[in-house]
Amino acid sequence: MVSTLTLLALASGAIALQVTSPSKTSVWTVGDSETITWDTVSSDQDSFNIYLSNMASYPSTTILLASDVKSSAGSAKIDGSKLTPGNAFTINFTNGTETEQIYAQSSQFNITESTTSSSSSSSETGSSSTTFSSQTH
Image 1: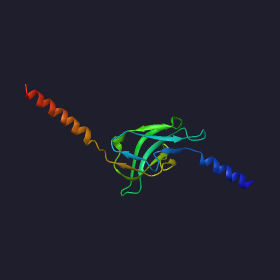
Image 2: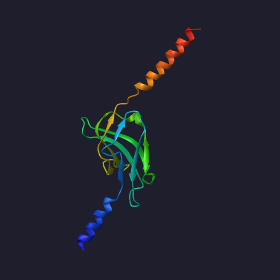
Image 3: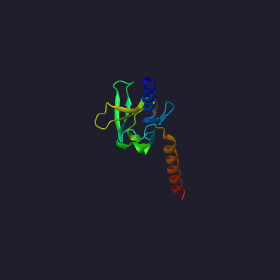
Image 4: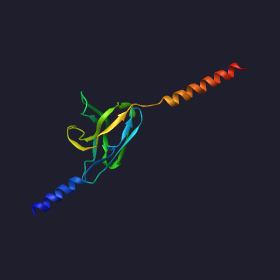
């Protein structure tokens, strides 16, 4: 009987709030909006805060990305302007008042610098072509 109760307790914990994205193969980009997704069950907390954390770097980084997020939403869009490049970041879902109480954590993932040079150079090309046209008249 005890082993059955133990198995039930373990099984119920295994299907609780779970971060599904980002995953270990995810790479986010500084400045880009990113979407965090999760699975939930009815016994999970109604809401939580979302933190971006990196304990692999010194000093460690912990940034509040969203607060009072409804568990039932299943996803949240994150403003990429708060991101900084680096390796081994995690997303933590925490208790709103006791942030050290983590409900769920993502796999580690990386954040890279933005590469927007191609759109800048096409803008410059368009501008110089307009200037050249007006000089020929």
